[in-house]
Length: 138
Image (cartoon, rainbow, N blue to C red; front, top):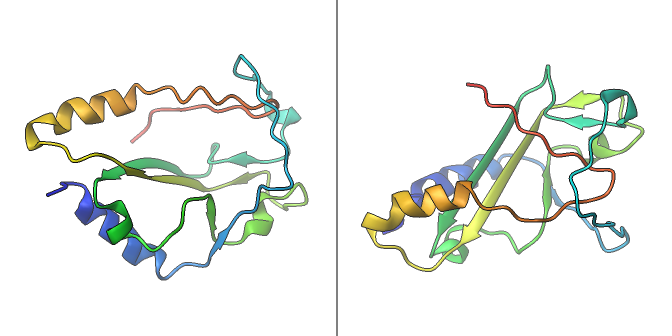
């Protein structure tokens, strides 16, 4: 059994009540860079999850992922996608990132080591003019 499956099902139930649209990045060319970009707030069009708004970031792994969720691979917007445009009224909007991660089966004794290695994973995707930051809070 995957110990995170109950969380995946809870997320699936919550998302069933939300407006969800798949984002189409086929026309956008993301330029990658070697270093993380540093941006000042005055240089940003919009800040996702920045103070004073809320943000959450969770990764839920399962070896049964595709039997649990009803989404194809991709990036989805939960809520109004127009809030992500440069014409957005608010400079700061609440933000959440949910990553559903398909894994190989894990023995129960390996869950802790897996979650620790998952936290330390560097995806090495650094996009020009995009700054990622993390602030630990309760």
